[in-house]
Image (cartoon, rainbow, N blue to C red; front, side):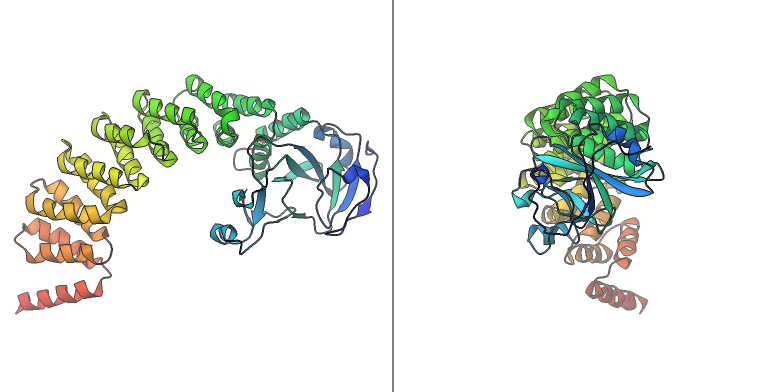
Length: 420
C-alpha cells in the first residue's frame, strides 16, 4: 500500500531554523530525515507506511495539566538538579534515566509520541515533552501533522493491551497515554485497570496515579469495584503519589476501615510517604490498635519513614509499653533505623529491665545496627556484664559480625584474659 499522506522530505540538521509555516508549532527531532504527513488523523491509519523496512512516526498532542518536561538524562538525579548535566533523548535508546524534570521551570503544553515500525509492527515507543531535545541520528521520521487526541488515546490503549506488563512498548504506551490532556485518557486507563490481566491492569493503575487530580475519582471508584489483591493494593501507591487532600483522606480511610490486611498495611506505608499532617496520628493509632501484627509493623515502618521528632516519640512510647512483645520489638527495630540516638537511650533501659527473652534478643540485634560504635560498645558491655549466658552468646555473635576494629580488639583482649 502506498503512503496516504502528502510528504515533503527534507534532511534536518540540529539547530537548523525553518521558515516553513507548517513547522511553526511543531518540535521535530534533530538530525532526522523528516517527512511531513498532512492527511493521517489516526496513528493506527499509518498502515500505509508499514511497507517501509524501518521508520518512526511522530505526532504531537496536548498534555495533561501539571506535566513538567518529561525527558531523558545521563547521570545522577542530583547532578541534574545541580545543573551539572543536561537533558536529551536519543531516539530508540532507553539506557538513560527518564522522568519529569521539575527544576527547569518549563510548563509542558504538549507531548510528542514517537513509534517505530519494523517489519509491519510497532517495536518501540517513546513519549517526551515538547521541551525535551531528541536526536534522531539520521533515522527517518514521518511526522503526522493532523493526529487527533482521542484517536491517539484509542491507539495507545490497544498497544497497552498487546503487552504483558514487561513489554516495553506496552509500558511506554501507558506512559504516553497518561500524559494526554483529554479525560478520555483517564477513562481508557480506568477501563484497562478494571478489565485487563494483572500485569496490564497494574500498569494502568500506575499511570492513572501519574495523571494527578484528573484521575483521582477513577482510582477511588476502582477501590469499590476491584476484588482484594495486588491491583487494588497498587491503588495505595497511586494515591500516595497523588498526595492531594482527598487522596490522603482516602488513604486514612483505607488504613482504618478496609477489611483486607494487605490493603490497610499498604495504605499506612503510602500515607507516610505523603508527609501529610494526618499521617502521624493515623500511624500512631494503627501501630497500637490494629488487630493484625503485620499491619502494626507497617505502621511502625511508616513512623520510621516520617523522620520527625514526634514520630520518634511515638515509636519510643510503643517500644516501652505496648502489650505485644512482637510489636515492642519491631518498634525498637524501626526506632533504631531512623532515630538511633533515641534508640540507644532506650536500649540501655531494655538491657537493664527487660525480662522477655525474645525482646532481649531483638534488642541485641538492634544494638548491633547502631552507627558510630554505639552498638559495639553496648554489646561489649553485655559480654562483660552480669547477664545470662544466652544474652552473652547473642551479644558475642553480633559483635563478631562487626567491623569495629576497636571493639574487636577489646573482645580479643577479654577472651585472652579469660583464657589465662
